[in-house]
Amino acid sequence: MADFDPAQFTPVKRGNQYQDFAVGQVWQHHWGRTITEGDNVIFSTATCNWNPMHLNAEYARAHGHPSPVVNPMLVLCTVVGMSVEDLSEGGGPFLGVNQCTFHQPVYAGDTITARSTVEEMRTSASRPDSGIITWHTEAHNQRGELVLDYRRTNLVAMRKG
Image 1 (cartoon, rainbow, N blue to C red):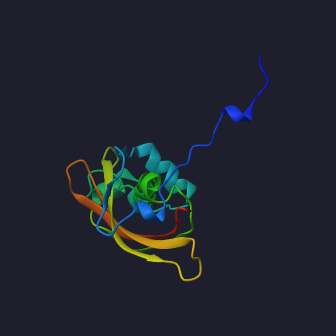
Image 2: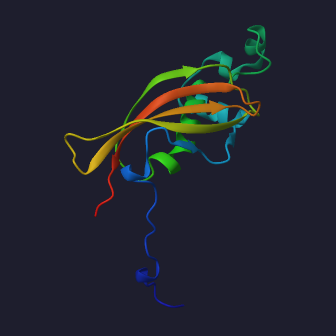
Image 3: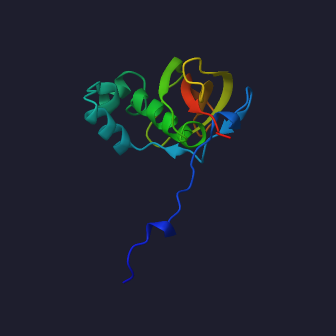
């Protein structure tokens, strides 16, 4: 076996920089994610969210749902995760989520897709090599119904040169 030569593996730049964005630009995030019952149970128990609406089928049915409601925080985390490759994989601190609205329940077996629109951009006053971008993200189920939307802000590096 040949000796390992790290020079044979050149790093590939991932993510987008500030200049790759424009106000009004829409990013359709990858193919989506089907949320399973197992995802919901593991996420809810790992986060110590013992709400019976997420873990007890009879309780959920007694409250008008066909099955346990997927933990909304799992839906939010899944959608943020789907957007990372397009919006923030290039690095830069996450500055927050605002105006987060859960429009309707998600159930195991629902497939969630998402898109984000650039709403605001400005250069950072304290970090001249970065800008601040706010995106409005919307998530839909397989029937095209809006299940979640929010605004997310990140510090995004500018391209050098």
